[in-house]
View (cartoon, rainbow, N blue to C red):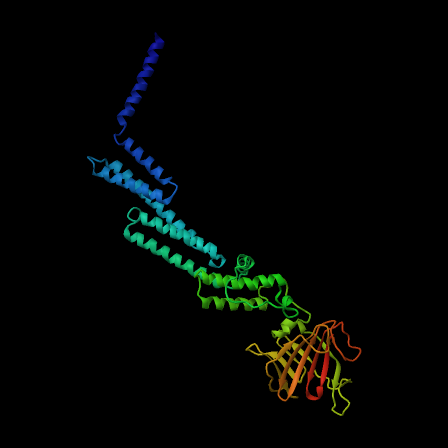
Length: 411
């Protein structure tokens, strides 16, 4: 009997609690719960367009509720709060998308990465049209839309800058693989690609294959850029010339171009740095015009022979390349003053009486003609006097004045 009394008392307490809870429940609690659930569902939509569409419907439901009979202010407040949170979340996502498509360091971007960023921005512009009047006011829409347009234009300008840049070589190699190797060469008409000067590949720091890939790739890359309408023909030609100059100057070298041996290509381009060293005169010859003809004899003139990166001189003449890119031989008097420049120097690697490789630089200077012959190790001229060490490099300077000749040897 006592146990039944305890059980009845417990049940009475529980019923009292339940009754008390029911008494404190509000008539709008269920509505608030459904609003919050709807807000969460909208926030979890996969795409921005789905989220915007759901938000628009959510707002329409709110308007209907407000226009109904006796809307609870508590429900209205929850609606407004949830809608504000959703709008804020979408705006935040929009700003993140813009920031993601804004390069932190434009110089590290490539054409493909910049175009991908612009594709994302254009996709966002499409989403903004749906967001207008839902997430943004007309003024707010114009502001963010203008910001996106400015970033698209900035990225587009950077794309053009990347295309016209001649710093990176990978894009040329890629174009070579895509076009030349596939038999679909682009751009300007190119030459036959005949044999290059001795030392050419060593001077530019590339193998023959690497040079051919870059040279053709430059044609292909800028030719394709014109075809696609990314740049104009004039812009293409300017960039092409700049890139080819860098290629021939060794700016795209893959290995060291610090040369210490005679390099014909460098000599032809006015760079004599590989010849800088100590040289000594080892032979002198002349035709005294007494009927005995030309013959080698003792060293009498003993001209001082000097070489710098941009100039070669034996105290009679100066051999260099002027600011217009033209190689000249200039006569100088005993005081070192110029008597006048020669005509343009003509180069040839077909040298009469040469045994082995040789390069001549030939030009008239005033009433005389001068020929400078460069001979690498292992080469010589027929008729040289005995005792000249052909294991070393030599430079012979010849003038038509009594056929005076002198041979200098690198020590």
